[in-house]
Image 1 (cartoon, rainbow, N blue to C red):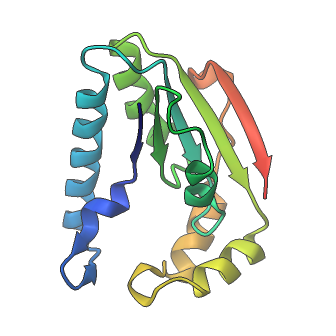
Image 2 (tube, rainbow, N blue to C red; image 1 turned 45 degrees about the vertical axis):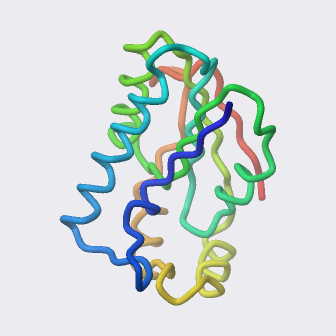
Length: 152
C-alpha cells in the first residue's frame, strides 16, 4: 500500500483550489490526521517527505514511485526544519522511519513550471521566492533515516 498526502488537495473545492490562511491551517490539520490514520495498525514501512520549491516536480517524482512499496509520501514544500518536524514526530510515535527526498531545482525552473500550471493552482511568485529564501536542506540530524537529493 502506498498513500500520498498532499495538503493542497484539502484546499480543493467544486470550483477549484481556494487558498486562505485559515483554509491552509485546516488543510495541514487534515494532512496530519491522515498521516496518523495511515500509520495506525502497521503496513507502512516508511514515511517519505518529498520537499522542495513549488514547481520543482515533487508530485511528478512521487507519481513515478512504486505503488506497492508500503510507504506514505508527504508531498509539500516544507522548506524548514520546523515545517518537517511535526511529520517526523508523528512517524516516530508510530515507530516508522522517515526519509527525506529533496527535489532540487533552480529557482528560475520552478518559477517557469509554476506559470504553466492550471490557473487555480499557480502559486504566487513571491511565495515561491520566499520558500527559496527559507529553504533549509533536510539533514539526518533532524531525524531522517536517509536524505536523498534529486536534481530535477
